[in-house]
Amino acid sequence: MYAKNDFQKAKAILDARIEEMGLRKTVERYKILEEIYSRDDHFEAEELYDDLKEKNFSVSKATVYNCLDLLVDLGLIIRHQFGNTHAARYERAFGRKQHSHLICVNCNRVLEFCDPRIQTIQNSIAEFYQTNIIEHSLILYGQCQKEGCKHHPENQ
Amino acid sequence: MYAKNDFQKAKAILDARIEEMGLRKTVERYKILEEIYSRDDHFEAEELYDDLKEKNFSVSKATVYNCLDLLVDLGLIIRHQFGNTHAARYERAFGRKQHSHLICVNCNRVLEFCDPRIQTIQNSIAEFYQTNIIEHSLILYGQCQKEGCKHHPENQ
DNA sequence: TTGAGTGCAAACTTTTTGCAATGTT
DNA sequence: AACATTGCAAAAAGTTTGCACTCAA
Image (tube, rainbow over all chains, first blue to last red):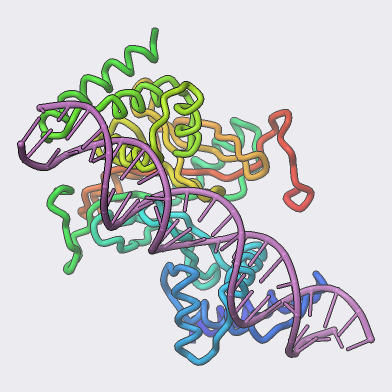
């Protein structure tokens, strides 16, 4: 299965980096990584916490947050700060092609899209300002036409 | 003065829309708008609150937040959610040309830049997905070379 | 054995809410 | 006078921290 290979890849990197950094291989870290790689969406820390609890693998929130930080640092997951919600959202880094986000301001649904021109822009700016650019985030806010999207009258 | 005209323009709109919506012309709303239009940066709600207090015009935080929401809705100010800080940041909408942001992950400084290609991308995506796109946000995260930028060793 | 990592609860930060007091219309 | 708006303080929401206990090395 596609996602399973991605998890194996991520796990191998986590393994290697944990050893390299002299950290400990705790059950929690691997369980959390596995849970994340079983998902295909943009989730909040709280959702991950609830999911694990529901699957009878309870971890404390502190551990969830600690682990998310570690996985972001290692590049195994990506953190987003969308403008329409308070909480940070995460997604796995492998097995999903690089993409940008189109957020529906009515129903909060996230649509992913790719456009190679963004990388071109990033390269131009990096060169112009002689700056080392680490990453970019392009978010479009719009109104999706999907069914079930509750259009607020004031947004029409 | 440049910024003063921008404030007058924003104030006129606020005036008109307040009447239109049957809201009340409170001193607070105009003071807050004026304070915002005297600034040229990306500030947090708390900073605005402190500024007003320092100028001997105290408003409650509730009022600051309420007013910021109103001004965003009316398009007189712009709200940003940058990924490196917790709090939302705001800037005035008039008198500043449309721009994107380059954030230094070391010192949190905000550099503004313009690139017309972003609008092109937005238009393509809007057409492709047959979606009404209201706004876009492109944020680049990098390491600036400005003096006083405290480079964290782990980021090098 | 040892100290990194965990769980828990308390603290903290940012934002929202409830309610009585105020002031615009 | 009516009620939208304010101030204040308390609550919420998301995240971080302190500390005692646990378990991987």
